Amino acid sequence: MIKPNLASKVLLCVGLFFLLLVCTASAQSETPGQYLDDSIITTKVKAAIFDEPSLKTLQIEVETYKGTVQLSGFVDSAASVKKAEDVARKVEGVKSVKNALTVK
Image (tube, rainbow, N blue to C red; front, side):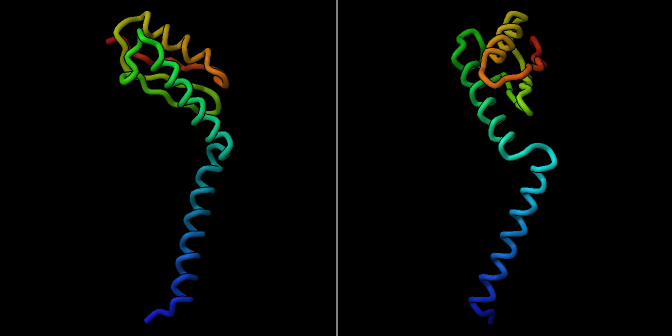
């Protein structure tokens, strides 16, 4: 039988190992602060697109990396492609927009 003290030490070591692994993986691509900033920008862009009645929000995907927003998915017209890009550019914190929307 494993002693409770030993079991808690093993669990603590395993937890610290996974924490270190996660922190190391995110440090290679962007800092936790950048990741949080990008998440906030993504949320704001999604909300702005949702608030725009001429856009179908469920068909537009938004990703952000270091302030650069990428739009992808499908829209009904070229005007919607331009409108989505304009809406995204107006969001605070957006440095640039890569528009990969497709008209279907």
